[in-house]
Length: 218
Image (cartoon, rainbow, N blue to C red; front, side, top):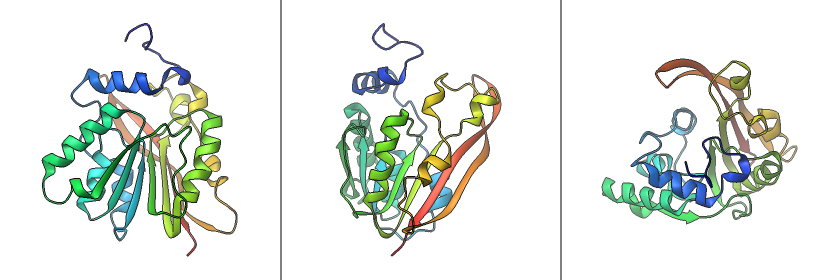
């Protein structure tokens, strides 16, 4: 990392320049596989309109598009979106045409209301103030009858010695997500700290991911 992008960045460091530099640093910084919780929770949903918030290099958007979804993929990094578009074109068929790549800073951007049958945010770690704005906006973007899926590293990972960024305020529980859903308008289908195994620097760790899935009443 450069001095402008330190090895242990703060939340304030993680803006557009930080992410563009990180995505330039390697051919892929994430695997080409969709997030396992998206696959588990969305595989049986009928395809419609999806919003992928924090889409990165596009693995989740591609997985959805290959299943017939029309996807709006949003990320702060133009470099990540360029990679995602290239990966989509490599897939051939109609995949690339089903995805709209949108550069936006989600701390200031507001998605259209009632517009998507699925809104998914996978491992979007922001500060408390930005989350307080973002979660209600994501809920408002879900069309009646649609679903919201929020996945994140659970704060218990810090307590159990999993090597996560030492920034406690970037972690949160399901209570924070559920509190953003207007009372009486939603059914919470899943709210759990889901265990799994992740290998970091050659060491296998038991990790827990927050998974919140909720359906807006039709």
